[in-house]
Image (cartoon, rainbow, N blue to C red; front, side, top):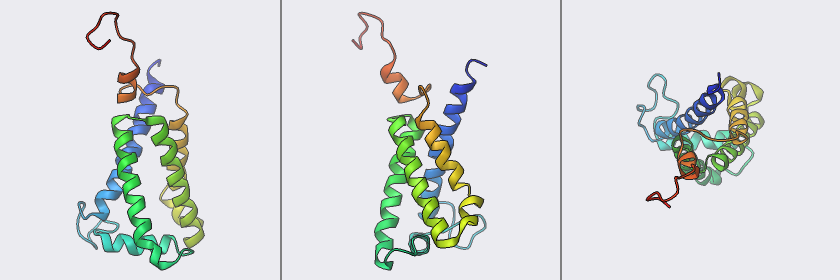
Length: 154
């Protein structure tokens, strides 16, 4: 039972990181073309259209920039979470990004889609991950581990 919290933290880190990168893979067509089963967008154009719909309260001309910003953030944050590099900050920023996405979805489509896609749950998981005491099996843990005196790394 002692390692259970560490395993849960690891699972949350890997699940959130993988989810972010999977969404990017979808919009770049790596999961298949538009219209294929289990493909949300399938290409950049469809993702930009969806971004405009999610942000229906913003000017239409902002959609490409918002899509680009979301993609860059998801790649950086997803990579940091998978590697466990800057995990606390990456988790906090992931939570804020997902919170913004959940709010935009709710404003544009009503509460059901954000609930169905568990965006609120993922935002909460990111917040919990940001408050974890440590991040075992990560670059963060490797960088902060105690080193023996006189080791090559001293």
